[in-house]
Structures are given as structure tokens and as C-alpha cells.
Length: 292
Image (cartoon, rainbow, N blue to C red; front, side, top):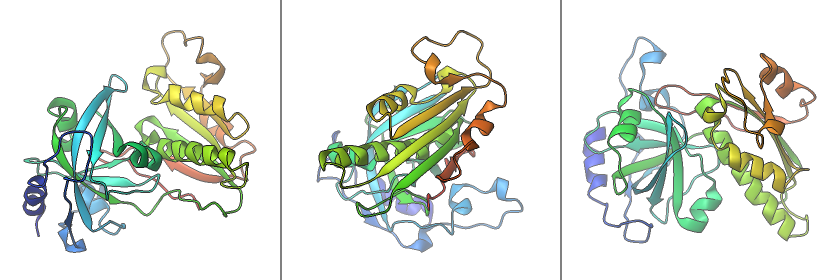
């Protein structure tokens, strides 16, 4: 079945305004739904071709945009109400189908599975690009827009309460923070469960090393700092800017490093005991790598 065919079928399933509820319906798709074409270079491949061998759920779920936030001058964050059966693990991405747009986007969730459980919402942060799905998000998408999504990705963070202590080192640049921010939020949710259980569950620590051009492009910085302050013994961060042209706000200064070349060196210093995960951006896709 071709992409336009099953997309048009899924689009007809939209029937519910935000927030999400049980009237949204999903469609089941087999692996043959991914159209493959021979390309001379991997850089020319679109998202479906690049990830053709990655795990995907069989279900294509409708979703409706219920919020749009300007996360920075170049990044928009979408809040999407989804079907009650929609599920994902922190670090995974979605195939992003837009009616009347032939290209399929690939974007990592930047929200936690906990937000999905609490509110029926997932979030995507997308940087402006000429790639059709990203361009549509920045120029045509509005509250109420309807799309379809399918979860995929072999790389994620999904510990169980009885797992041994986990030390995470998360290294990100630019909008590549998305899957790692999802993991950081998930870790924060699990640490709250640990606190509620008296320390019996989810023994996790995480250190985030995050670099961007300037503080305006350091996405989610306020929430990251809040997590560090809520769990100072468990969550820490080093935020780096490479081309800051104005003074850093005073409340950010304790967390910001502006020294050239510092990002990579400080992230690996005495962090060898941690499980590592990195994030960076490719056009039309925000990749993730699994934490062992």
C-alpha cells in the first residue's frame, strides 16, 4: 500500500477536537506500508527509506494539533492530542504523515511517556527547514490541524523498577536534544516515583551536556534547570553556547559555559561510568540512540 493511500484512509479517522478521547480511531499497517526506492546516496534518502530497517509499530494513529509554542526563533513545539492506545518509549520517534504532503517526516518525541499517560498529549519540537514536513509545520500548521503518526525506533530508555542503578550521560547539540530531553523528563518522572516509594524503585542519575549556538537556541533550558534543582543529587547539566553575542541572563549563568571547545571535553571528564546517549539532527529527522 502506498503512502498517499493509507494516509488518506487514516485522515478520515479524525473526528475529535482537543483534548484526546476515545473517538479517535487508528489503523493497523504492515511493514509493507513503507515505500522503498533505490537511491545513489544515503544523504538523498527520505525518512522512510533511512529508517526502513528500524522497528515500527503496526498502528498508524490520528492526531490533532492542540497547541503550538515558539520554543525559539527557529523551533516550534507542537502539542498533539492522540488516540488512547498510542504509546511510545522515551527516545523514540514518529513517522509524521500530513494530508496532501507527499513526504513523510520523522521527528523524535520531546515529551515524556508520563505526559502522555497524564494528559493524552505528545510533543514534537521541529526546527525550520525547507524539507516539506518541517516547512508545513512552520508555515501552514495551526491548532486543529490533523495528521497521522506511527511510532518507531530501536533506541530508547525504558528501565524497570528492579533494574540495577543506571547512570546516564546524555550529550546533545541543537534540536538533537529532543529524544534526550524525553529521556531526561522520563528519568525525572521515575525519580518522583522513587521518592514516593521511599527509595525502593528506579535508582537513576543523569548528566546532560547540551550545546547550542546561543542561549535562545538552548531548547527547554528552563525545564532542564528545574529538574536539576528538584533532584540536585541525581540530575545535573552543563549547558554550552558557541556564538553568544549578548550577556547571559543572570539566572542562567551558573549553568552556562561559553569557553570554546569546552562542551566535548567536559562531557567526557570523569563520566566513563555512565551509559551514554547522543543526539544530533538530520534534515527531516531527529535521531536517538539506545541507552544500554
